[in-house]
Length: 269
Image 1: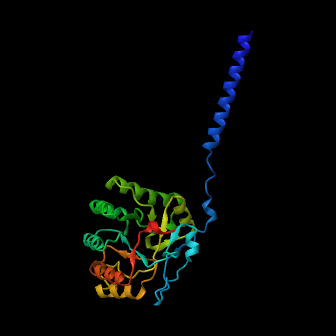
Image 2: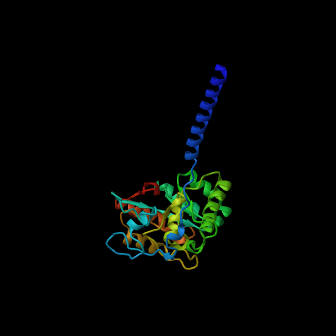
Image 3: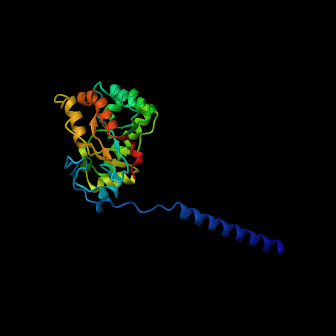
């Protein structure tokens, strides 16, 4: 009889312990409710700049404090020193990226290159070279669409697909920075990207450099930087631009003479 009672007690103790453990794991694996992205505005906005000649950050459609809520930046509003961040959009290769990389190396600049599927497919070796030389390589989506026009699932496919392709073609992980194609975005887009772990990067220095058949010229680029440089600036330049390639050495030299250093996007807070 005593053995039966002891056995029953052991069984009850085992069941209690099993239930307790199961309850703990159930709580541990509890899935939180999905974000309702319909609560965030889907109205399309296009990034622009209201420039000034006082070497201050330009205005735009959203304030730095507003962007920061979504982990997005157009410049480093908390920069404490003379720092500037160089970034390049790479839709395809036009024969200038190797020289750009050589110039960056000369000045010990670590830039960020935002790449698309077209660039990765065309130039996987250049993508590897960027990573090997210490640059960041960010996401510019698979097909360069207007992100506000996409569904949440469509947006995720464009972003995740590019990251997967980069890993497949290069063996490297893509850095978790993204530049919205054409600078088009919405609050909903920014929220989705932030939830995906991305930091969205706009810009505070840019000019018409992307039309390969209508280049601004080397001196224009040099003069533009001399006129609009500012503390915490984030540049938007295109790797396809002959003018950028020819002017980059002088631009970096001039900024160095003004006491600037060249930061990396992981410094943004």
